[in-house]
Image (tube, rainbow, N blue to C red; front, side):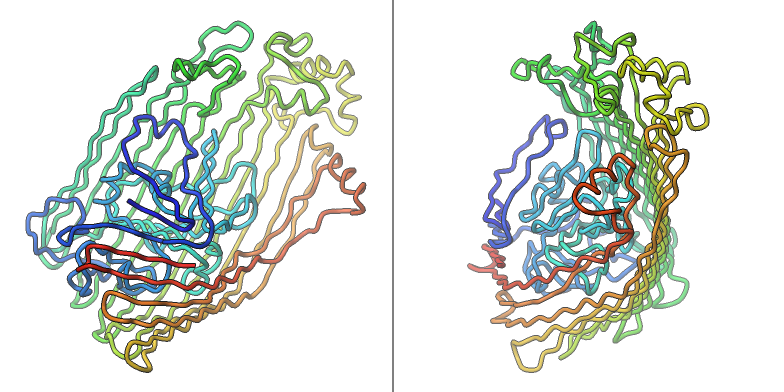
Length: 622
């Protein structure tokens, strides 16, 4: 039983078609109970593995168990403050799920995880493009408002293009998922204005062999079957010196929507909206000298969705399980992510030094049916009974491509002694290149002429007087958007205990961000032969955090925090001549070239309590 921001409640159960019908969210406002869980005192939070040695230690970055942190059974160890703590002790609104909890809830992708998280909404459109909203903070354009991390690597994509989206890792072989609600500008920087979602992967063990596996077969009424299979194995190669962990996972979500030819009703692709996802990971832990642990790793994931997950209402009959899509063209989605990383941890006794460097490369390709949109753009409408005059079989499958390259480096130094003061300081550098393109391909110049003149009843040259020639002989539009973004930051956070039971939290981050943007527009639909535009935006935001915590005892505490979050500014793409006419009508000669960052302040009062011998946990915040 979970309740969350806004007092939402859900009864969890298995839904055989949960991957086919998306959009079920726990909706809420900013205030409410963050967690209410009823648990047996003997329940645990261990990962769902079968270790060869139940006392195994874990290599890599510092990892603590519930027992190590002196917490009650059932609590989950987290590193949301860049130091080891637990969900019921960290003074912020957080939800955390280990692999055991994720499996128990049937979570197979990020949609399922965030559906369990009150105060969070996750939207994914029919083409696979997604967006996270935490406590109502979101934007469909510009930099991300929610930070998304795989371990210490930020992966959230900026919305600079036509169908940009962040690609999330598979929910398989994860140590845990942490969802931090509220601005996290001090420790996680730009892009965490609403909150942060962290996917933490397991570290290789130097002492024990463990195996984790999962398999599933499901059926969909009037659709194809679904299945998944995955296995992860960790083992020491040289005891106490070298350990390895390998995982592989494959999932097929069967389709249930039949794609038919619009005018004839002939079947084109049965159950066309199926999806395949493959994920692979390899990690190695090395201890070359005492106290130093190096963990190189690589993560790879590929997703292919054969067609959009949508049906046409007037030719479908959902109550009888008949779902039909009669669009003129398929709309597949492809995405690939690659993430090599190197993590180094040095245990210096009273403090630890952590360095992380990574390269994140993401590509995605989305195709959409523009067969109806383009005639509308030219001032005409088509119907299933009446296609384009003189060209009823016309189709146009528009292509959107996005590529994201992110180099990230972070150095942190943190105290390890639980004295009157604990602290963490660090430096961060990131460079990100992103390219987004849109292509409107045509079969030939003659085919394009036939389409335009059939729709408008006018000569092609009259409709497009500036240029009617296809770009490179094949594209009626080609838009290219290029961005280069860099961020340098220094940050720190300290927790001071001036008197017994009272803790004061002070944190700050100073950043310098730069965003360079360029757009190239070509082709008849743009109204120009070739137009280049762009801009540069640069600023130095400061994000502080102040908090106060009162600990009644080891199980009950009250906290108050004020924190600032921000997302970096950016630049605007130039408008087309057709849009500039509308802009002039409201008194503007042109759109602004750049815009500054957005900021948000959050003030939170919260309470975390474990009652009745740790059988009842109540975490609340407003």
